[in-house]
Amino acid sequence: MSENNFPENWVSTTIGEVFDFLGGGTPSKNQQSFWNGKIPWASVKDIKGDYLLKTEDSITEEGVKNSATNIAQPGDVILVTRINPGKTITTKIKTAVNQDLKIVKPKFNTNPDFIKYLFSSKEKLFNKLSSGTTVLGISLNNLKEIEIPLPPLPEQHRIVAKIEELFSRLEKGIESLKTAQQQLKVYRQAVLKWAFEGRFTNKDVKEGELPEGWKWECANEIFNYVTSGSRGWAKYYSESGSIFLRMGNLDHNTIHLDLEDIQYVKLPNGTEGIRTLIHENDILISITADVGMVALVPKEFPEGYINQHIALARTTRSDVYPKYLAWYLTSNEKGQKQFHNLQRGATKVGLGLDDIKAVRIPVCSITEQQAIISEIEDRLSICDKIEESISQSIEQAEALRRSILKKAFEGKLVPQDPNDEPASVLLERIRAERESTQIAKGNGKRKSVKRG
Image (cartoon, rainbow, N blue to C red; front, side):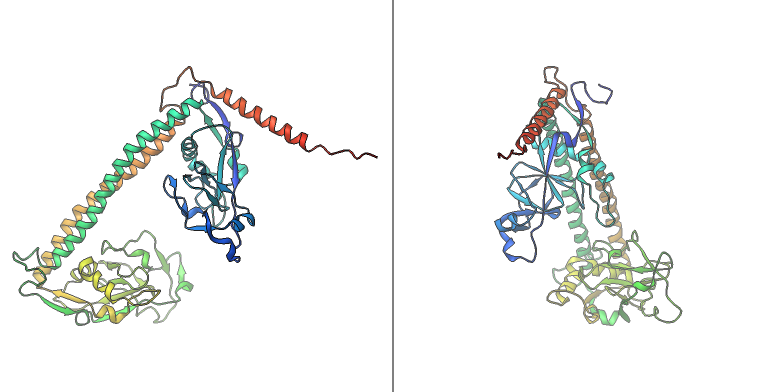
């Protein structure tokens, strides 16, 4: 190893010394003739996965001519420099790019995947060197000054082959973990379906029929109070005070509130907050956009309110557990299906308070309700532990991916071959070619002398 912590036949250089960049641009949105043509036009939203196969938008030849966009060729690496700086993708198609992207053009003949992996190994540094108040971006000058290790050309190909071999194994493992996650989701919903068909508390349940002693009741008969949250509370936002619950605090897969992102409010003296003040065991339901998320307000919850995108339903009946109702409303095959059928609106779907009151609920004895809640929570608790283990394994896989890239560009992933031409020779050729090009450009700019 050299003083630079990589092999002797490697060399330290900068991105700008060995790569050129072509910037992008956006044709005027006011000119219809520039858009919806035959030329794909890539923006940050298209940069997903390893390879670019299609784009959401397209432009015309006229749009290309009348904008700052450039065309990436199949095999080119595209680098994101704004919004998500450092992310890369190899394009499989001929595509124009917008101003948030750069087309990477190496000054030497190399494998595009080598470029992609090299830049991916520097993604954290790209973010560190980025700036911007609302949108992060890295300047071309900062980008070009980033130091990188350059291995010999043959080793570049060996590095790519080894990374792809290891990443392939890793992807198979991650795919298996994500399959298990999906199976857990299916099982969770199956548990809720069985629970509210009475299968956990009755031996013989006929398909489509309620068990003996169960009966259907309308939510209007169960909830004695149903209301929605208030609008215009932004003026009361504060760094402390009462909790103000929003849709992001609810989830489709659980009845527990997500309190990672909390907004607080401070209300003036008066009665403005009384109507939407939440109580223990209130059931909260999202009623706009992502309709049907459900949460149950837990015991000893601090003072809190709901915004206009959430409704609360409250019962004072002693023969129905609120937790039983909350789990029922969370079930895809039961409560969620009714929410879906009841929601209204052509463009913006939503639930009205009357829709919530119209939901039909199977009511059984309080003893059975208690047993059903216990069965649900015992089974879903096991699911939670498995889910946590899977999530940790996926995080470890991502950490391993980063470790592979780190080792690759420290020269520790594949063996060195003493017969490889040193990277210093490659760098000298790049520099010589650059000087030659500059001289040629200088000669071409000589002014002609007027003859008298």
